[in-house]
Amino acid sequence: MYKNLDVWKYSFDFVKEIYKATLSFPADEKFGLTSQLRRAAVSLPANIAEGAGRKSTKEFIRFLSIALGSVSELDTLLLLSKDLKFIEGETVTELLDRLNIIGKLIYGLMKSLGYKSEF
Image (cartoon, rainbow, N blue to C red; front, side, top):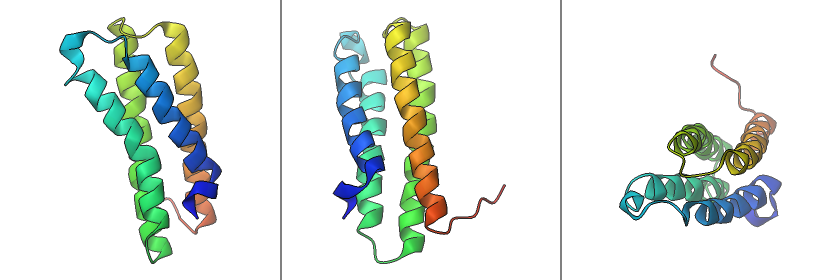
């Protein structure tokens, strides 16, 4: 069951941290960076859960790959939020550290399922 996966647990908690961090964003960013950060964060545990619920390992790996793409998207959005001074540097560093762990866990799970990098 997906709820037992450490990567799902970490990413689920990460979503809550992103929601907290974006509470102080400017109101005019509600449909901009605020929304984009939240949607990308939610996609992490959602894609892990959806992939785990699929019938094949190949499909699970595909959904993990989508989640890994969201890790890169979040990295960029957090750096932009920092540069725009929407989030303090220390908070961004903590979030990026957590995001890095999540990315490694996703990739590790993919490899354990038989994923072979095409690069």
